[in-house]
Figure 1 (tube, one colour):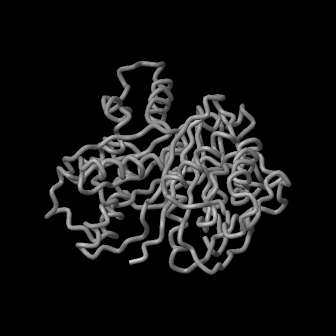
Figure 2 (cartoon, one colour):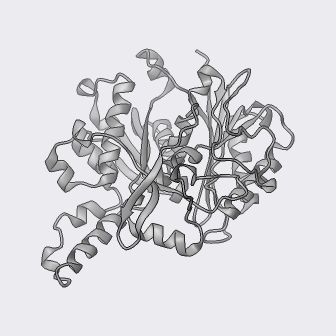
Length: 384
């Protein structure tokens, strides 16, 4: 990311041909058998890969763990659209004969599928479910994991978010007809948050899962601690199906700060939600200005400029992309920002080049979604 390289490309989708999208590049057979891939979903496969990588990074020995005390909490934007669209497309080739409809359809389309596929693959017998939170869902997965640890429902949480959205043509068609689908001759420049010439969302798939545990447990086993969740908030606009409410976003950030017991001057980095839509970016910038004012200690960046909008994975994926700043004090830049929209001009917006700062102790991550769901999450550097 510090090199400023985008991961966005193009794919072919039903009825629309070539579209700009961000796609995951991984080997699904690293942790799954071919039979599992045939029966499961793309979202499940991404989630399984992320879960294994998270466990390995945390140096956990699941074979000796009580798997009934491990919970799986995944945020999703939607689930089941991919399977349904593909099945309808397939039976169209057979004059809509439903005899060719897959008998795997039902388990593939239930909302808990991605989380459930992890339990099947890893033999985890604790609670699992997904949280439908539109594009705020990645933050919700982390918040749910935190809450379950506090309630002593689990001793370990695999929490985050996942999305297989680019595999459904309906999302592309809807964003296009809404005037909110990004276009650009160069796909890598299509995601342009805050830019005067931005023209919409780059739809991407993705996944990110974190190992959450109580601080006492992490210290006891000598775990590497990337950060501590110290504040969070979730609220609702009660305003519009799509258009955001800056005032409710203000309230969401302020409540997260209050729960963390810190002031705006303590926040070193804000990872903005900005999706590169005309109204969405302006609304969030208005909200950030109202909360943070002329505070010069806070730097602002955006991760979607690199990877597009990973929907249900966006919140957690973008947060994790900023965690290295706790160690190197480098704020990654927002790329593709060639002509700053005056209505998105924020103090200390990091543009096109990374910024080295004196310290990074607190990161605030914004994630907002349709139907007016807002989330803000604050992570603190672990001081030892």
